[in-house]
Amino acid sequence: MNDVIRSLADQLGRQLIARNYMVTTAESCTGGLVAAAMTDIAGSSAWFERGFVTYSNHAKVEMLDIAPDLIESHGAVSEDVARAMAEGALIGSRAQLAVAITGVAGPGGGTRDKPVGTVCFAWVEMEQGVQSETMHFAGNRAEVREQSVRHALGGLLLRSLAASKPMKP
Image (cartoon, rainbow, N blue to C red; front, side, top):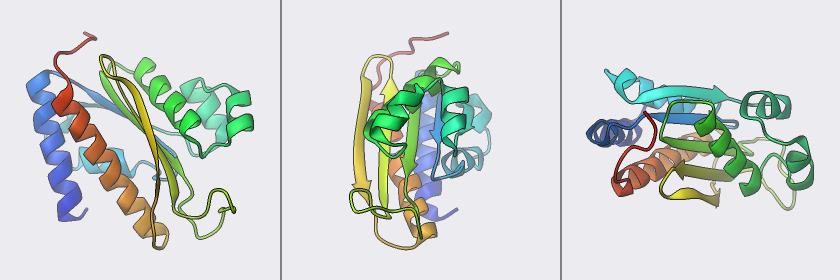
């Protein structure tokens, strides 16, 4: 793990502990790298609740209760699916904050509308609701995944700073 990612994960952990929050992840193109970055921090069991690696569409449906027609109509790489993934992860855990990532890391799989490097993110916190965005990262598969991890952690950190109190026991 690089220093930037380690620093973001460490800061996130401190913020979550201060707010008595737990976090969960729902990851597709990153394959668990966000969860790995967080669990690389000693003591992360105090704030990292669980991670869902839902690489296939079937896993998204089965583990996160995503409607198959949502994936069919918008595609797995979409903000709509990312939002549903984040909500599904929050519902399926004891966490108060969730992030979801789905995208095209490459080298193949890209289309004209969703080229390699297209990554959709969603974050959900009970008081703030769901927020999502699509990013377009340059580079090879490893670089797209690393940028995605950094962006996901940065988004979690921003939302943990904005959170005021835990909503779930």
